[in-house]
Length: 477
Image (tube, rainbow, N blue to C red):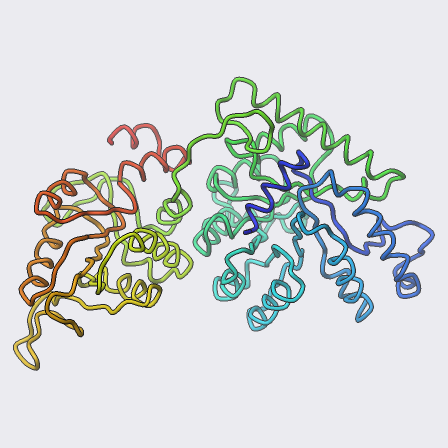
């Protein structure tokens, strides 16, 4: 079960968006334990207190957060305490390690330790680790990461707001982080005003946000929820304020906050057809199964809208360039998976890619599905073997042809002709994006079956629902 599924089940089971911090934080632990310098003496009492918090709150939360630095500061005994607390947390509740890891040189071994040995479900990372440092954490498909994007520390304001309030650094950071991983694996860690949450939500409507340091004042809490929730009234994990954990009855305080949040969301949902997936007896919107992939393709610039001059001289309201996918391994992995789901339903002997844009995809599919790959040359060389089709094949082999975008069908039909000229058989063509359904029908009239992962009309509709397109852009389709 991946992180998002596990989180969704916990939200539904406990009707909660709240996360509780489990850490030996001297600001909230019982007073009789003394100060930090006495923590080693009271390590077993700290363990009992943290285990008691779990018992008190296990039916009130959607996740637990463990702040790594508190445990590490206690040395070997602190790391032992961490392992004990991890073993105590019920398996059905997701665990987020708040590490804000920032060293790219240790990313691979740290990811292996926390995900394989400690079995946590998600981790927070510092953005300055960069994409190279984040990638080792994303190779675990059932795990997730949260990129620190904004804090409420007043001394960081001049950095976060640079160079201007209209175009602050933290929004540029969010835009960059979105290209590092898919929505179900990469979320954002945010603290700040309702305005900060609203601006981040506006440019990342599909991302999960780990929210810190929220205000309990009713008006501010309502404004925060309105700004941070998605159109489905979800998309937030809300860290419980430390004050509630240090009070006499954390359970009662957390339950009151849970009820306040749920009531505000219920009020917001009245008359709204888009409703929370974790409230009982509510509707579920039909979302495209490849929604995350569509949004990722848009975010990395493979799909753009505007006025673009084509090679023919005509002006189109869109531009598609899928060649940059290979520079984004997490997106490329999703593309290969989508293709593979179709190919696994077909019968063929060889995979063929159309030069040049589809060759990386065909290669990846050959490796993923363990099929030989060939390709028809775009032009025949005047020297060497002068092959029309590269690769090893036999007369009568059946080929599935891979292309990226189906526009006019010209390159597809030309490639089929080359393959058939050397004795190969083509029955199926699989593309990522079908721009015009009439082209699909044109190919099928030639007795070939065309399969598309995405139709452009589906892409436009998904981007419109996610707020990426305005009504004028969407009306074109």
